[in-house]
Amino acid sequence: MQYHTSHRQSLLKAAILWITFTLVPLALSAQSFKLNNGEGEVKVTGTSTLHDWEEVAEQKSGLIALDNTGELPKITSLKFTVVSESLKSGKGAMDKNTYKALETKDHKEIVFELKSVKSISPVTSASNKYKVVATGNLTIAGSTNTIDLPFNLTINDGKVLLEGKKGLKMTDYKIDPPKALLGTITTGDEIEVHYNTIWK
Image 1: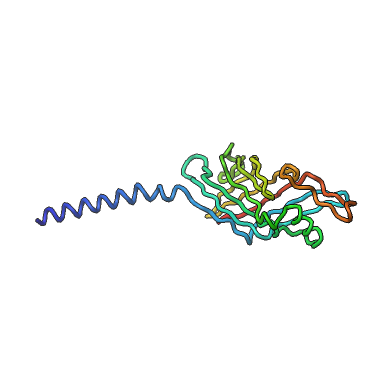
Image 2: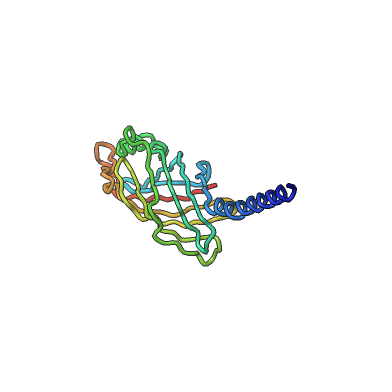
């Protein structure tokens, strides 16, 4: 009887060890990081017939999941959101025209969601930095296009840094470039999104 009890305990210990060494690494292989709204910056820059302009996103959120067990990290998911009416230029009249163009009453958010990773390669000067081109759906003012989003990905001390820039055209998203002063000032169709974000 004592032999059977001892044998069962040994089997139980072996099973617990197997679960620990087999399943725990699997659980740790994919890590999720949440965008820290208080750090980093996302801004949109553009031109007009009067002067260049920029707007900074005050409310941004997102999640990225990475599997960093191989030679190169794998991005298993990425979603990034900006609240449309959190874009601020410091000029109330310009912001009002922006929100009108983005139809923010009906479309509260600008969203990028990953479909696949087109390429990822190490940056030779740093062991933890990678050049990435991600393909995903970008939705602005209710219109969605599939785009390639380039960025540098840095993995460092429990943080992920994601930085890059992407040129876009407003008319690709059925947005009429905003106008001011009875149409005498016109915004250029081409804009550039600059992102320097920290995920924890």
